[in-house]
Length: 251
Image 1 (cartoon, one colour):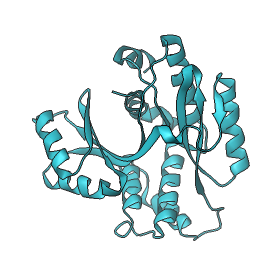
Image 2: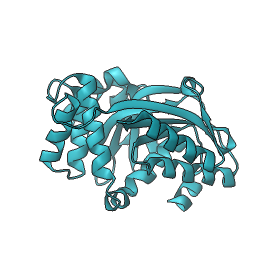
Image 3: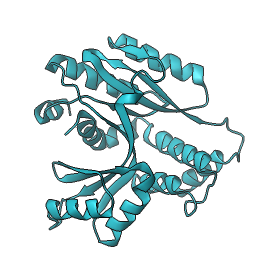
């Protein structure tokens, strides 16, 4: 399993910490705002990306009024500055590639924060396109096996029949990858078969993986955590490959 998948699991378990820091709802609101803007609608029935963002927010107990306000901001209602989605690229220690997804109302501030954080960690900020070719935009569906009698092999076959490209087993979950444009179809097909989903989202999946020495790998994980703690950063993707033991020790 790729480092991104392991980091995805680590961050999921750290959700309580994020909420204490007052960051979780802010990031969820920005996801909703960007989704509404990109889809041109604040109606989740007409905007699939917005529906995913709202489902994720509700799963984190975000108040409905916050959700509505964030969606309306995306279609130009309210007096807040418009948000835009920007990707930054770079390298972490050990030559690990980074794709950093941000939602910002101030490009200069965000660029400065991201570049400074990478530099301080011994990495190198990159120009647009420097590492983007190493990643593919995919849909990611996460299925929980906890408390179920699901057979992972059966779920994998059902997912592939529904249009999935690949399925990875991660502890007590299955991570199902598909084309981003097919995510709504694969998701609905699995729901129709009664398969419990933890979530469905857009992801940047690395085409190849890098496995640095343990010391460098830990440096990469610390850098990713620092980047994700920045106010404007929504998600960080990498092509880091780490062992289960290293992921567990960092968690």
